[in-house]
Amino acid sequence: MGASLHFFSLLLPAVSWLQSTAAAQQQQQHQPVTFGSAIILEHEATRHKLYSGKISWSSASAGQAVTAQPSSDSPSFWLVRPPPLKGPEPFDPQQQKGGAAAAAAAAAAAAGYAGAGAAVPCGAAVALQHVGSWATLRAAQAEAPLSPNYEVAAAPNPEGLSGVFVVECTDSNDFWRTGQPVKLKNKLLNSNLQASTQHMFNYSNCGRGCPIAQHLEVSVSKARPSGWSWGKDPDLWVAQPHLLFAAEGAAAAAAEGDFRDEL
Image 1: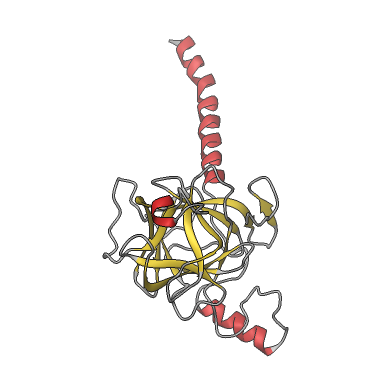
Image 2 (image 1 turned 90 degrees about the vertical axis):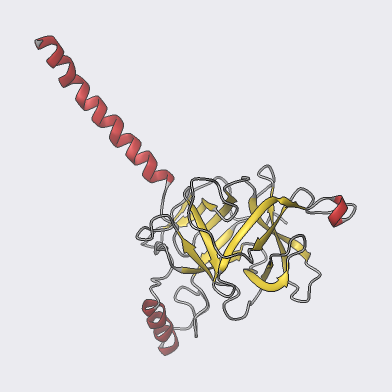
């Protein structure tokens, strides 16, 4: 009996260490996404990555094409920003000091944005800017190229709420975290960003030499947003870190390589 107690007394610290190590690894894997950070957005169901390239849709709304590309391709990076404010943004490097900057900072604070390095709370509105072209992800009421859903593209200065997305998490009281699925609801259309293998570009629907063959159409659903389920729904996206800004403004590289335009 004494030997057993001695064994368990030796085992408990090891178990405690393993638990703390596992908790630390989980925390490292699920870091908060912060404003000013660059991320890769992965479609959870297919592992395709949100992509934008130097081709345009032929619709009246135009805009740089946005698709979901196979996971084996070089990914696009997306800068997480607050939605446009009236006046300079709180961490805009071009803003001038003085009254205008103070007014912008006050507007940002009132909207719940603390500038670069602040963790994005679940339920917050964000804008996603493509690194390289600096076009902003946006939805339009035009029909998507392959499905009857709403078109998604990227534009330099999207108007109104078309370029604003609300981050919806399983826990509305938490922050948007890397490695955990979220839904991105477009503020203009009140529906979610999605992709599906049912709508894949190929040489039949895109032409010979199609630069986006094997990519999936990315759209905003015309259907009412669904609730959370146990399955991998077509409107679930997972942020993978590339360059995360800490609250104090220091940047930490979360993946190998510097910013680069994949186009």
